[in-house]
Length: 285
Image (cartoon, rainbow, N blue to C red):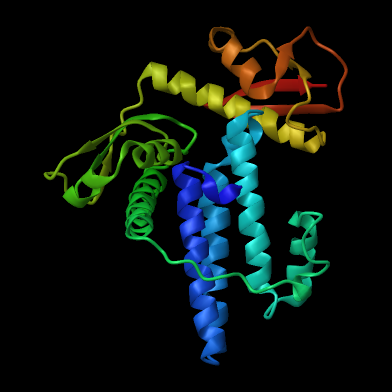
């Protein structure tokens, strides 16, 4: 079952679900409809902006981790439909039908209200620490934006000023690294702001950024072609100044995109990409 996962993101979203059910139930039982409904928007934002974004790789990989992630998501969405039902009856019904199992109620409006579960001290602590991690991400991304550095461009390090962030365990620090796209996180009480990015882009980091730009462009082309994640593709890159970089990272590109490089071919799916001020033509089929 989804609620038995040990993954930090799963444990966190399930704790947030417990909080949602408790807050919404309290609102309805005390005839305070604003308090019953308001937590829904916050929960949906947590679910979409953080949980789903940070779980994307787990959803793609065909292994036990994927099964656990999908099980957790199904459990969360099923309970979310139940909590939504009084305020958003039609969408709640649609959501419930999309995720419910065969042995469940025929309609969300015939199902029982979810039970309130006690939130443990460990879950409260995790929610606090996850909030701290997301604050670091917000500060760091704002600094990227102010310096006009795309998130797809890897950076060497991120310094964090506040000592309270030192309690973040490695799995939360890894989430920050992925979201901010940095190699390391250091704690330094002498920096001016809450965070400080190392803005020096070495040739190695620059090349990695170029590869990420190419991968992103081809992933968008896959979507336009309405391909499934498991579909294999053929890919062709026009001769360019990036040829050496692409050859060096051929295995990574192939793995990320489920692609084999080919000679030029006719295709309805092609894109001219502007990378580092230079053009790169890509085709796929």
